[in-house]
Length: 114
Length: 117
Image 1 (cartoon, rainbow over the protein chains, first blue to last red):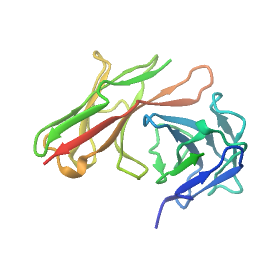
Image 2 (image 1 turned 30 degrees about the horizontal axis):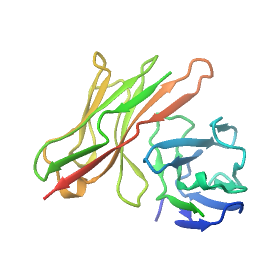
Image 3 (image 1 turned 45 degrees about the horizontal axis):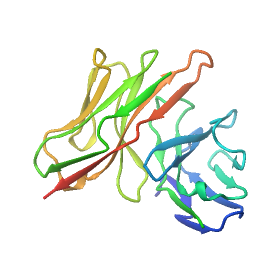
């Protein structure tokens, strides 16, 4: 069984649209994350979230918003998509809200904004 | 403030020869350090981590890394490269932020390892 799964794997859309990427983990972890990987492979954290605390990277535009219906899910909503949003987005989870813990990553969602 | 520098964006080796991927870090306090690997179209996978125990850390797939505080380095090595090692490798530092009590992760920019037959 896949530990961290995200859908869709590929997403192609036009500028100005609103889209969502879903993420689910079946590991029973308390904390989930969203990372953005740009074309130069540089990985940057966007959000970390557990049921008590949302930590936002202040450089992330407020067009991006995480939504967690329950502990096992953390979806990423993006409003008014821009060309610069094209990237690969990774969901991840860890047992506790501590970055000393091993992160488990999903396989990524490649977003292309035309 | 912490930072991570991966000194080589691209490393190419022949199969069966040693691998060295270099990583230098800066950190205000005792950091934890990780190496992650990303195969094409896959998520990141943890190779190994250092958290103030033994300075020589052994990971999966024959990789190991040595924490050298005096050199602020955490280079990743493997005695003999295999074709399946071809991937992108990320050095990551985790530091406790004293003002917030939270830990922050900083990723390096990655090193692409090519393995020639």
